[in-house]
Image 1 (cartoon, rainbow, N blue to C red):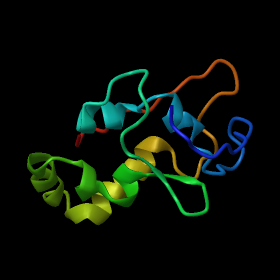
Image 2 (tube, rainbow, N blue to C red):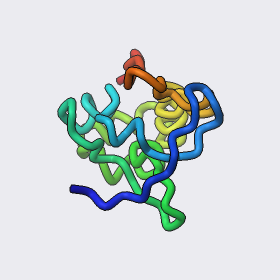
Image 3 (spheres, helix red, strand yellow):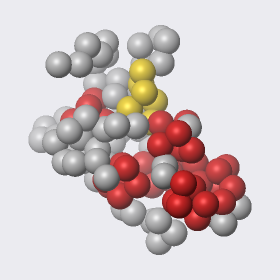
Length: 114
């Protein structure tokens, strides 16, 4: 059992408070494709910050998570800045809480460059 802090999930599409519930429920398609994460398991790129909030490691520290071959391919996308911008776009950063209140639904589209 993971000892993560409990932060109340905001209502669907309300501003994200980085509670991490979406990533605790399971990996998104990016984590499944890039990290070979399995459905039903905690996302391996889920990072806990010092304030108890959560962050996406694929966004924050992609080179730590992506294997060297994929990292080399990411370099052809104009570097990590463009890569993390694409991760943010795919995951819907800035669009509010992406996890429906009931039932729990995770969704994101894999971009053509992935």
